[in-house]
Length: 223
Picture 1 (tube, rainbow, N blue to C red):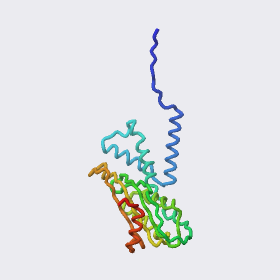
Picture 2 (tube, rainbow, N blue to C red):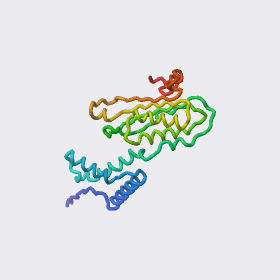
Picture 3 (cartoon, helix red, strand yellow):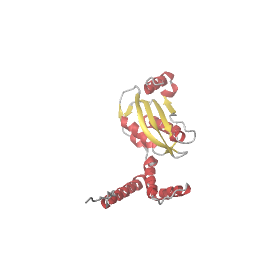
Picture 4 (cartoon, rainbow, N blue to C red):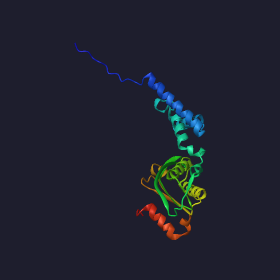
């Protein structure tokens, strides 16, 4: 006698559901404490957006979306509560007086005009005035500055100003290259378009030969 066997796809166990709930609660507590973000307020706002566009925020696929978005914003905007200057407080006295360059520092930020991501690479160069800083600290400065509602032009200038002020450098050059999703996936919709901004301070701004040298080091023949 042939017996038919029903294959039933097993759903998540009660233990898995409990672990997922615990992890979400842990992430929510971390975001609230570390980033001082009003998560419930964001959740209510996201729910209203879903209703406004004609969606049902209570359907299965969207039920947890407001909480996910709230935690995401806490992560993306954590730079609002951080002071990037703290990374430049520990310096080392060195007689080195040639250009220091750190290229291709990746970053992700959010355009304050449409709250859509823009991402790319930052290139930083400075001419020491007797003090040098750990190379990783430059990347940390970029991270803190980028993690907030931002425009690329201001981000570029802020990084340059922080370095010239905190390091007493003879010159600072910052070049940022980024792709903005607010113009690649909406509006004009031009994938591949790259925005390039620069900020020059000190010798890199006033001395043409020094400026040419640092740009050559940054672009390394790519221009």
